[in-house]
Amino acid sequence: MLDIKFIRENPDKVKKAAQDKRVDIDIDQLLDLDQKRRSLMAELESLQATKNKVSKEIPQLSAEDKKARLLEMKEVDQKSDELKVQLKSIDADFGKLMAIVPNIPSPETPVGPDSSGNIPWSYWSPKTGHVDPKDKDKVAQVPNKFDFEIKDHIALGKALDLIDTEAGTKTSGFRGYYLKNEAVLMQYGLIWHALKKMQEKGFALFTTPVLVRDFALFGSGHFPFGKDEIYQIGNPGKLSEDNAKENQYLAGTSEPSLLAYYSDRMLKEEDLPVKMCGVSSCFRSEIGSYGKDTKGVYRIHEFVKVEQVVLCKADIIESEKWLEGMREIAEEMLQDLKLPYRVLNICTGDMGAGKYKMYDIETWMPSRNDFGETHSDSNLTDWQARRLNIRYKDHEGKNKFVYTLNNTVVASPRILIAILENYQQKDGSIIVPEILRPYVGKDVIKK
Image 1: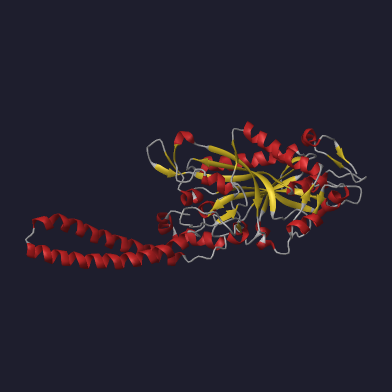
Image 2 (image 1 turned 180 degrees about the vertical axis):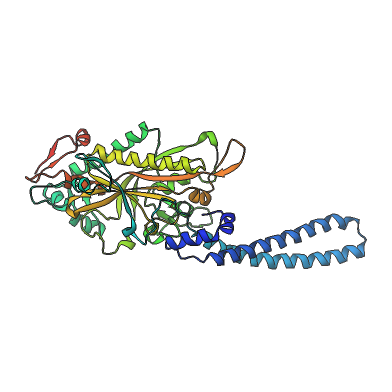
């Protein structure tokens, strides 16, 4: 959510952001509602001031004058009631539009219609180290090459009794799966490695609620934009003795829960930055991905993720440092696993409405003969903080909204695709990455 004052003063910037991000919103209509809203509020304040003034005068009036004044006040009350009804209607329309006003993207964000407009920012592999995208010869060396016919993660998982999508579909429905044996140890080894890394880097660890309320998803920006991707619980618990019910949802990431932890709080500047790391099961309907990646465990309804969230001062330079720092943590995870990857600078048409700047990290997946997204790193400035009312008092005593950032530390089983396929051997076995061997208990997974 943007400051309405900023929108009034910069309508063209906001219109361009909406156009570039493909957000369907009429900014002129929003500003018209804003004007009407302010006029009604001013009129209501004037009427209330009149009532306050008269209430002080009445005790000193004669009976006849008092009667006349009370009749006048009855008309004022009627007028106030009418204006309040108008204001309530305008407020509702104003609020709906304000909720979808996009953040202004950074100057470094490429303008593009969709993922085709994303720009490679860097490449990395154990063989080459960091590679500049302009160095085409080096870029070509980043993906792993094999001198035998490779198998995809499903064939490998089935042969080694690691993944069962057939039984998963039978039990859970479309995109269901079971992880088995060493794949289970590998997944939770990744989670444990990620949590220890984040703890060492000074992040507070959380196991977050999977069930969340509307305000948390609205605050993070998943509502109203991604409502179709969120599972709603059909039988929410009773919240009060009068059997009132409130909608509850399965979170698609721990980000909404981590942000909601600080909702409606006033922090001190010295409390910042707040560094949080959440681990949780995650659920996504994937309605928007109909027909995409239907085989295997690349695009699924249920997975486990470790997420990092930072609340920092309202300073663009500081927030950019955190964006880069969080990206480096995600890259460190992939470098620990010795997996080739690339970093993409995400364009306007492929980033969320609330994003100021965004990177995706894509890991090499041999069966796709391409990179696949495994991490997402975003700076949302104060767009989420305004929705959740997360503020701090600066050293001058001024109240400000914090800046929020989030990034994936690791998400499984998608990362297992890259591990199984990049570490496969000619005999059908899979070498276990060195950092996971203490958890898996072996160096090689064989039939």
